[in-house]
Amino acid sequence: MAEPDLKKRSFSNFGFSTILIAFVMICIVTFSVLSLLTANADYKLSQKVAQKSTSHAKAEYAAYEVLAQIDTVLKNSYVHCPDKSDYRAQAVSDLRQYVADHQTLQIQIDSSGKITFQTTVDQNETLQVALRVCSPDHNSGHFYQLLRWQTDITTPERTDDSTLHLFGT
Image (tube, rainbow, N blue to C red; front, side, top):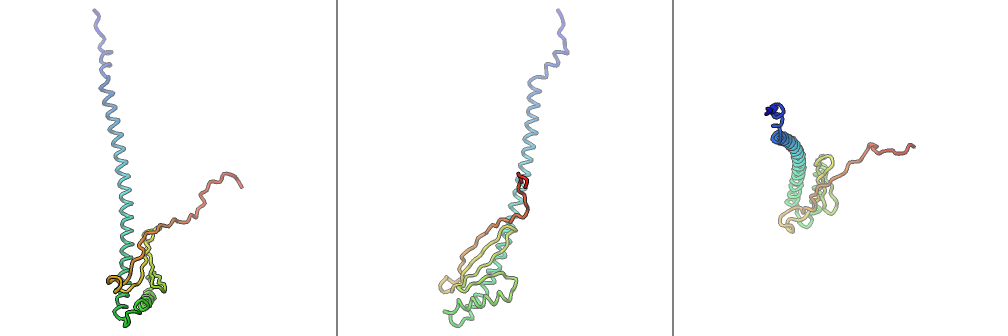
């Protein structure tokens, strides 16, 4: 009887187990790369959210500081107003004087006692605040009524010409 050839037979031992190990290694490497890409994308997104939250918090803080100044002026107007029926006119007058004395405040006041101002959130967003002067006797102890507290998003103007010219002119 003839002896079997050992060289041919040893090569046939690289069958299913080798293919399975190679496939598992490819899967592990693929999922590792996908996990790394996902973690990096999540990190960048969390950075953007943190920056946006910080800028919103700073804008709200600036608005609260302006509200505190307005509240102080309105309180002083109410305390020093001899006739409480003329409080609104006195408060608007005092507030206009305060804004004129403090040029950094960008507050608009109309004759009816409506006060509006805005703070910058970022280059495309502003926090718009509007309130109305009212007597604390009629508004449960508050000197103003908040009418608007809203973030407005503005789209930037496009200055570059990025259109595709299909026909020569």
